Length: 133
Image 1 (cartoon, one colour):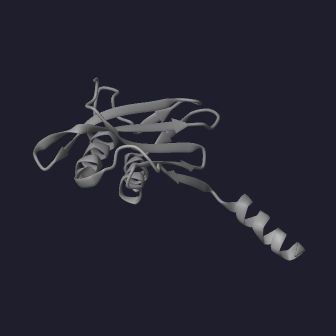
Image 2 (image 1 turned 45 degrees about the vertical axis):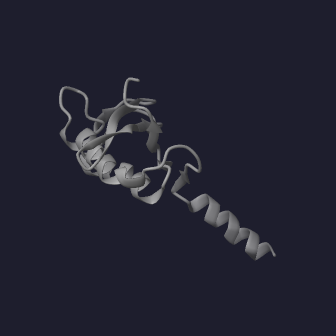
């Protein structure tokens, strides 16, 4: 029994990440490709200080919104992205890491999700309504 408890504690303490798929709310349905494209834009291509990737100060959160499309038709849904740096000091988020982490919540969770990865939290959340409405 003591050995089982030790393995359980070791497993809990050694887990570097925690993830949670949202169980309710809007679903991606046929907008996953659009959401991935939006994540790619905000992580790799956005300019003028709008990119999610880049420098974060302790406690910084960057949030971005994109309307979702099915093919070329805009839907009445959007994706809300949020990345938070919870560590001390400054940290730089690489564009590829940004995209990989946001994409995980798009492709792995039908209602979106949020995942803690070390001192970072990555959220990709589909919602009803368009950005700014």
